[in-house]
Amino acid sequence: MKPGLNKEDSYEAVFENISKIYSMGDSRVCALDRVSVDFARGSFWAIRGASGSGKSTMLNLLGCLDRPTSGRYLLRGEDVSSFNDDRLSEIRLKSIGFIFQSFNLLPQSTVEENIALPLYYQGWEPARSFSRARTLAADVGLGDRLGHRPTELSGGQQQRVAIARALANDPAILLADEPTGNLDTETGQEIMKLLSDLHHSGKTIIMVTHEPEIAAFAGHQLFMKDGRIEHIDE
Image (tube, rainbow, N blue to C red; front, side, top):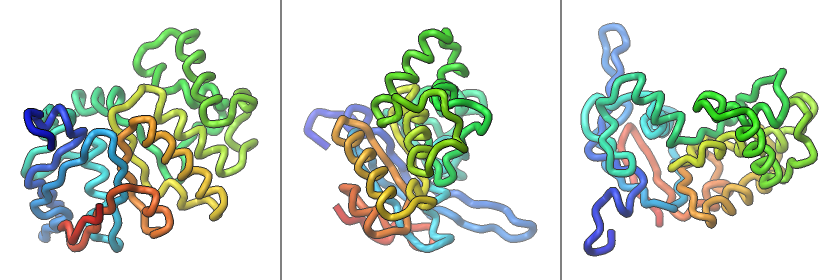
């Protein structure tokens, strides 16, 4: 951190001694164990680790889809750890963009409608939201596919729609969960080039992946093991 700057000035997200414990019957599972890490504004991270290492739990907490059992989560300097469901929903809608392995597009909606969906929930006027959707579709190379539905697109094109939708609300953070997992190698490289371009334009991106060649696009690689940070490569 630069001298004279507070964490909210230089960091997008901060985990301070975060633990997450799940109760499963009579047993308790510690998915995250006192994790502390700072995600700088404008950085690109890959979270790696074996199944059950805690990487998905970390992504869920970063996305305000769950709350920590203990510790603090600062999002742009604001402690969101104890927010209620309505406040967390508002944070997700306005500050976080999600990119999923399975795309999660609405099958009966067009490219334009899928991209505009988050803006509908924010109460944007239709004309304004569709104008924004058309701009984003062009940005991801799908300006000529606005009226197509997901079944009429390739996997790579569907993921581009999902990325455009994630950008609709101009989020503070883009969270990507295995964004190339359902794509062939060449298409996966194209998607990662797009994410890399977004990073270079100033977006903060935090991605879960098990593929070393995909993780290599990130400037920082965080390795999880048994709910703890094993090491960080920067």
